[in-house]
Image (cartoon, rainbow, N blue to C red; front, side, top):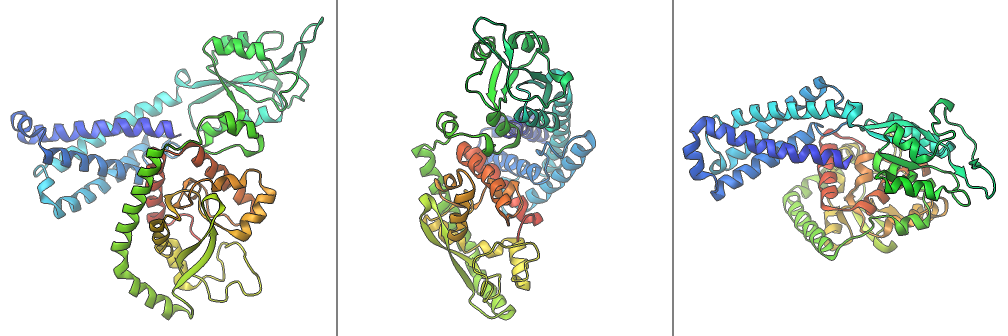
Length: 465
């Protein structure tokens, strides 16, 4: 999913530069443009243009492959993105006329970019749908886990193609190989290697990836067959790794401690940590400077709406399970938990005030958490901090739950932009899948993607309670 988005975004960035340059040449001629090509003002204008059009495209879900499944849908989203880009760039040029290349360039460049973007995304869509360009998946196993992976491959909107299932055979000394012990529940017509080796089956079906989905490997894992496939340039994945690739979350029920130890990821360099903290300080300080003038108005509104304090303070669990005080604008009645103790928020929660519903939907109530970020207790991006009472209960019933506390909690996170607000143990399990995926794959690109998704969530009011 991240790989798909990155391909589209990188080429869109190149096409936006081509569009801007083409519009400038059409408007002023190549001679004048050659003179200004490497001016600092021209470079800044180009960077601004590229940033705005990519942001607008993301905002209008141009890069969401789950929602751009036809040329018509792509055209509509690109049309909305173009209008958004024109509006935002018009505001930018009004605030700083010095970065504007000239009259007409904005309109021409956006039209050219929209045309190029539509052609490129359409070609990508056609290529993704064509079986020749699909990743051909052979599932090793015929039991419950194999059936789950097969269903995931078939239902995925990514360019995966399920070619079938392969039966695992056990080498028994002095006898012919015997089939594996797990009960077969996949469609019989999809089992391909009855009497043939795994390598022959993979070559006959032109499988590029073999997903090992055996419920039990000890004692009858076909090591030689799988190794032969690996040496013949066929990619080998276990079920949790493929699940992570396809869905952007972790398959908790099939993960072992050794998987955490030997799998890639879960690594943060010192440089990355320093850069992430620097960005947190800059963004939180800027955010507080912008929003502080509005604090008195927000405080008055809260006081008029319901009796009680303006700010809500609550103990939350942070990095290394250290507790800290989280700050929010109060959105519930002052006596919200009298007689009930700590309970999850729910849809249409009667404890939330009228103004609180507005604040939660717009995320205004979370502005004071910028103080937590500035203090170093939180980051802009990370798992959401949970209450101590809930953490202690969830650690008892959810495997690996404490692993989400190995980085700082965040104002926003991968779970927040990928999954609705949680209010149960089942929701906590699903959010943990996303939180651990983020911790495993943490990177500047993923942080940027989450930040942009958060802007979209705030603007369109998804997920808040």
